[in-house]
Length: 117
Length: 111
Picture (tube, rainbow over the protein chains, first blue to last red):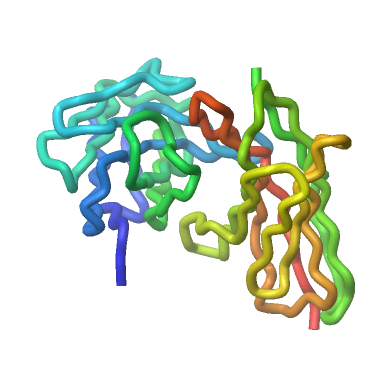
């Protein structure tokens, strides 16, 4: 069964802490994405990557960075967590042409719910 | 820019009722349209899609028809089940392949 695996389902951090959210996919997909999901706002794209060591800003990159050292792994980093970053974070991947979400068929992980106190 | 507007939830139905979740969009060019579903405690998964006008996407008893004249992609199911309880997201991709999601509609089906 193909999978996108996010390392932590639930995290609680304090303001100012550095936070790492890890995502691994086993489908050999070129494209990987990080979204945040908030009630009433749907999904908003933070960063994406279409190749190893490549990254591009999404719609709300402020306060976040990413790392893609290997094709299967895409990490989201909060350098100094703040309370307004309390959210559900979803990682996704897709195959196909270079670019954003390609054909639109994304495979999602189960999400990481982050609470910043 | 592109946008997707979904009917606000939550929607509560009895088992075997007819379901419609409205979705309208604004986009440049000729977008592809999608419905994603998120079951409790899980990530999103693709439910169905349509890539051109008048196409009908279907899966698991759900259907949606790409209506260019009304810029709509409403999700329908003739007889819902308790297991259909989930959050449903309408989405589109434009020629730039940017995926835009609606805000989601929570559906609860009661036995």
